[in-house]
Image (cartoon, rainbow, N blue to C red; front, side, top):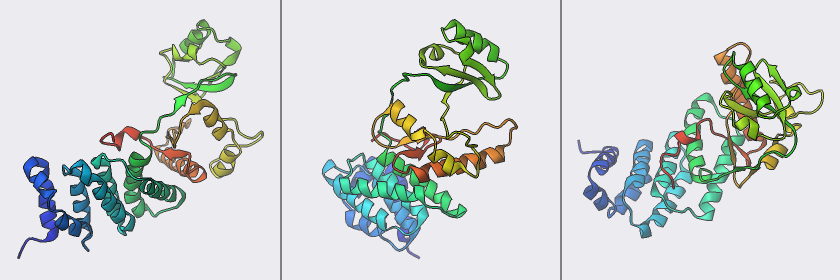
Length: 293
């Protein structure tokens, strides 16, 4: 039996990574590569897309290649293939058109606001990571500081609370504005500098005020988030365009990994559904953009 298209394209990918001359020659075989990226076999399309991303295209070719990758991605019906087109677009290092960026952002918004089965989520999550790389990875937000007393929570290694409290007082904070809680040290302050100079605490959390008499329960999370000052705080404290990347940490008095995972996933999804244009869950943002564009 002769070599199948899938085997040939897979072989091209492997050799192109090791042989620069061969990779350059492949750039002249666009007709064959175009046929492979629209082949009826899903794995062939996936390999062809990834191959497009690693080839040394000339600058004048990249816009056309990007257009082809985007169009095939937009039409791709198989979930596990879709992220491959995005990876190739990322590896091209080419500026995408406004139309492409608009389409990618719309797809990202769709993913954030819709529910998928457990099986679908395995592939959707990879596609979402690649969408973030293309649409938001270069966005930068600057912390503007605070200008009035706000509640903060400082987490630290248990047993070091009294040392942190003494250090904060030495640094100029008032003792009445500092108290111990089950999760760390709660501080009321309008100046973050005395806190930043300490090496005892681990993280600083801004406590988000919620509607008076509201109980922040798991079941009522959507309503409570909407009635909180979260978005106002983000607007006040951060300047910059594009989505804000976030991660959800769950602190329980009794360690329960399964419960923490359940709560973190639910809150992350709720935040994205409520504010798809503003918030994007990225637990480890550095892990999914392999190259800077």
